[in-house]
Image (tube, rainbow, N blue to C red; front, side):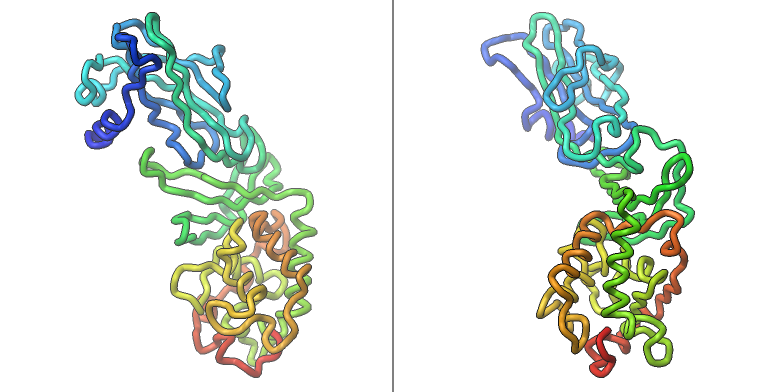
Length: 340
């Protein structure tokens, strides 16, 4: 931990005293996991602690408000930075252990430590984390990016990895969000959307809507074989042309389909809003999609915009960057293009 970080911690509330009237206290800090951050897989939980009466310190894992007395964390190793910056700190203050966050299950949890020392009141340190579980398993025996593609969610500052495959038989797809953490100075998976038994059926429903209302303009069936706005929504091409893909109509980094974020997906806006950010509502010059059709697409995006592993949807899809970003083929400029 850098000097300014240690000082900020000490000045902020680092000296934790369970009883204001006691002279002997425990001074401690939980370095990792950082508070309000995403975690995944096997990671360390670590920090530092010491007792002002020099009594030996014991540290126990704490999960969702319960101290795991059968899971002590090794303590205490050398931390010269703490000794230099924290008044009264000895050299050996470091504690550290390993946690497989997948065992907690996906979602929000509290993780921390309870610290004990003879003659001092125990101290509890806890942080809130959001656990991601790629593949929905405690331990992935196989993982591949071979058929995946990537994008950037500029609003959340996440890297998006689409259509990774997991599992012993490589039989499940997963869409992942990766974030750089300032507190840990490292990158990690912060959200995972995993293929389920209904993924194929859901995508079929979404593709059927595009087939019925959009592909006469947004496919190579359009005049000259060039989809309007360079957006090809034909079966087999739609996923790579929309999921984590930028729009040639916007310059603010908004994605056509932002997995898990339907309200930040430009394609959803174009079919659901009467006055979208740019141009007119789609389908062009045709009745809008029904509420049920819009909800089907929104729910698909909300659940991570998943594509079944090994399906016909995870090919290259005819993606053409020159077409996708050609403003001469903007929906707003092609007023006679039908109902794409």
